[in-house]
Length: 348
Image (tube, rainbow, N blue to C red):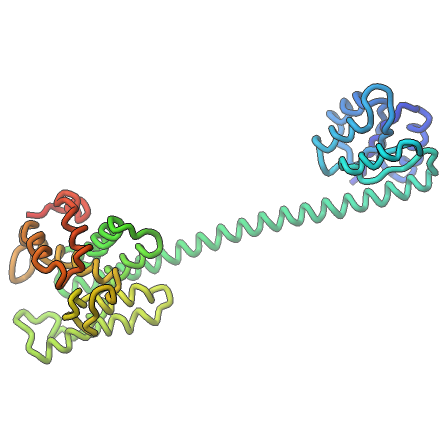
């Protein structure tokens, strides 16, 4: 691609000298006798390099320099100055001129300076374009990684939900108990000021709370009558089984802690480790309350759903023993209508 050079000087002899020498080097040259003509030409013809005298009638080369850098900061600029005006030449360099030559000048010196400036400009543009290209590639790859991560996260969530639905179906649950308690946990967690990643992990812990029942035999899990002592012992292993399954999966380590403690009681009489108070993960303490809500307001093989008023009475009765009192109070401050909207159904 040809390099276009604009020569700006009020002296025709200097313009013609530079034009002839540069044209012989293969450059495409343009001329202007003053700053106004230079700007008019630049409106029609992009140039790569400008050679301009500093002292000209009318507007000076300094004004041209300022305008050039606002039009295109990539234009290379070579200023021409007299020996008596070196301070102005240095000011031009500070304003963005790439170099300067003094009058009288040798044409060979000018040609060498121009070649060096064109080469430096070419390298600078190459670097700039590479940087832009690199930034675009980084943005594209970042967007693709985010898309892939979102798709992977969605696939994980869908897989977990499908597995939980299968477990609920195994226990002959009406609807999806696990999904309901997940929504309740998310709702109550937000009311307690939990947000972001922590809230998502609480919801996952609620969704997966019974995952350990995958290791419980149907004879025990689906038994209609009361469990005997040995069967109770076996059933009470499901939090530990669930923890063992989930704790090996990196992104489910926090939900695994919730699963492990979801049958602990605030007063320390729960299982499997008899944790007490705030030693119980907050997700498990929230779950204890909303699990009671879902268990009491859902139909069971041995009884129909109970009124919401009985849930309120239950939470009040066991506030501070089975349930964290602060979480119980927050639950009780939420209206029946709000819980119904969260559940997607009406309570008695």
